[in-house]
Length: 153
Image (cartoon, rainbow, N blue to C red; front, side, top):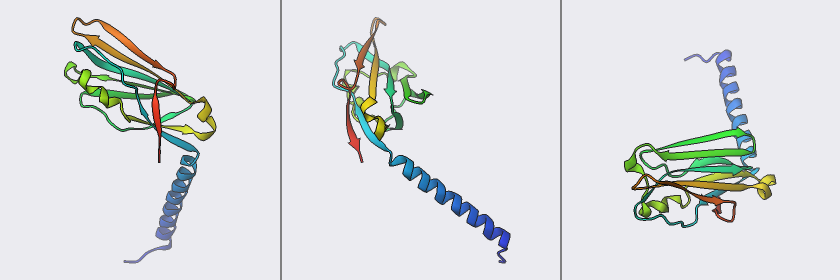
């Protein structure tokens, strides 16, 4: 097989581009702290089910969702540079969470926060609940005092 100089140039360019992207990405990631989020224990009645939730993150973005339950949809929207919105819900009634499923909300989301913005980082959560009579209610966990997080290495 004869390797032409044109082929060598193409291979070198691809290798250089891949190296540049890798170095740039690792430098950018070093500016962020990652947090694994958990919701505090909250109670729902025996006849209630969790149908969905909405999370608003100020000065951070979702870097990974650690658990996606079967039969649920997830939507991660970044409308503004400093705000991320996550909405999730069950697609079918069978997938709704019961009182025994609230453990799902332990370490279920990883959020990256720019180190220079850690003091402005905030998470607000709204959990949607419905009972057997189709009566709906919202459980609001607003502010960082209501949401637990731990640093992820």
